[in-house]
Image (cartoon, rainbow, N blue to C red; front, side, top):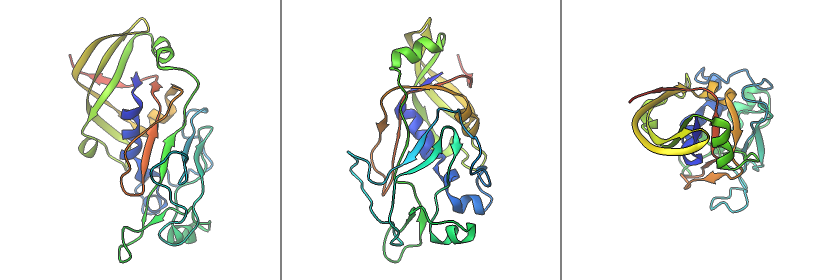
Length: 222
């Protein structure tokens, strides 16, 4: 299965709270206690870059006055760090990553990523199709708000896209469901295309991803 980058960044958005140290400390993230462990395919890199070149949102300091910096959240498939504010960092005995944000002066602090993206690979989309052989190219996923559970990682989404046959994009298909688990999907990534597609900012945060080839996933529909 090949996911269009715009769709894969939807997964990053839906499951971003799993990377929050607050979620981990409250027992609401399966990434709790996994810093330093392999949680994705060995060539997967996810970066949070508050000063990304070309980004419409650049944030040199967070809402608590902590200087921000480019962070490798996942590097070589290894979870390098969760995202911390001052409170969660003190509890964990680490330094804040500068991800404590406030919507206004009186608002409570929340942990948010900035330019949070899966880094690109080296191949183009046609090469991903060739590696897929026979499969599906997903260009639309609906229902992340209701069909994705950020705590368990499970998702079930109405989808649409194209049949891939013998490495070539074929007929359009719609009305089928794609189901799986986000954390397992990170381990099942086989390749990424060479261009990252970033979305529209939502507050302090922008998500981005390239087209992604996944080895296995459940699909139901005619």
